[in-house]
Image (cartoon, rainbow over all chains, first blue to last red; front, side):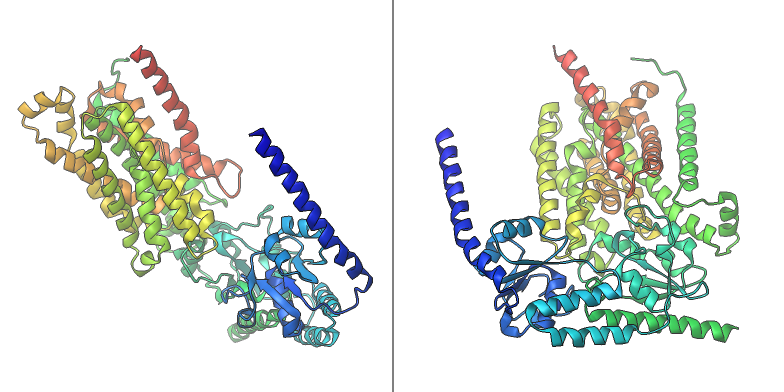
Length: 295
Length: 334
């Protein structure tokens, strides 16, 4: 028992030392010429996949996440399918000997910490909540990849679509997001930004729903939204969706316009936001047209 | 043991009254204030106001399921304890509920339930029938408490592991998080569609279980005596297994496993029916309904969001009770 424990401890230390020896060397020299465009980029985050596959040259990328290859969750599944997938595990990433790892600020934390410790160049993407933050992130990644022009083009596409009246007034059509398990979306999120940009008032932002922003069906029935955004991609059965099919939703006195919006359109800060915006603008226009007809 | 202090009709009236009061309370408690009389008037008058909708589409199915599932669990517990003459027999302890949950999980996550909603309770019933049949085949009637509990532990751990496996293999990322619902049960956000798919098998199951009342009384005098009184053991056994499978299988398929109700309630009520197993049945059903409704009111009053699973509350009440039973039998065995 004791002997084997000591043995494994010694081996463990030796292995860690080996790692540090091998990996801090090249990483330290990397820091000097950081401006050089990376040639072996690995993404460890779905949103990083979406930006990377659009901004980088195809041969700059070594691996993307398995999530990025899933067409239910990703808007770049076809491009992602060309690369080997990783699951955000440290061993997988090290074996690929990347010269840039793009990770999310809040995902696969243990792996990111480990990669930093052994000196791998890691770029962490924040979770932007406003349009300027989205644009800044795209530019930042574009610069890092040596693809500033593509980044500028993407920023221009998104910014162009978002041009429009600023904050919706009190008379604007109202909307509420209803997601699996009855969650909704409040203020200070990218989704809220998109809803407002579409000229809709997000009722989820005006409710006191506590930390988890869970909206009970009773509360939802009372909100009387003009637009009900069902935010789910139902590809296989789960109890989480049952609340989205509850019979009460079909019988609300002031029947809302139901918009099904796949979460993949607005989970990540990328050009798919434009599609989400278009869907919601269309819904807002329908409500306005009904109102004018009713007057 | 205490002597019965109330007559049987009075006991049923009291328990029925308690269940009704808790049913009404369950309608009155929710996540947004509701003017119950006005909502009731709107609902009866056919006016589709928000209040009427909340009452009819949200609170009524929830309270009804609490009543039906609670009655099922209390009744099944009383019948199983009487038939097996074993104080620890109960659908949850012996693994029938766990098996039913596994059946429902397989039907639901494989996508079969999407083709017809009736397949969901069917999955629960078939699995409950298999577990019930297995239990009787392995141990039969003269089963000691130890054998019964061991069989229950084995079936429950297997069912739990297979539920976990099925949920992990399910393609949906939400599935793995839904193990809590299946193992601890909940009535949250249930709708009338859940009531309709489960109510028929539950009521047929109750009929079968209640039909064993006379046989259970006779059995309490010993199996030989029961036989001379003309009780057909095969038929009683079929009614018990079939009734438990139908009612508990259907109930578990729509609410998940709600433990301990069938264990606690018959024990609490036994002294009031002069320890006659036959009389215990209906009383236990009503008591089970009251306990389940009360627990479901509690999960909505406890300020924890998302709300607690119903099985958490029944286990907090039931587990110490089970422990006290173990304590009592330990003393008796000395």
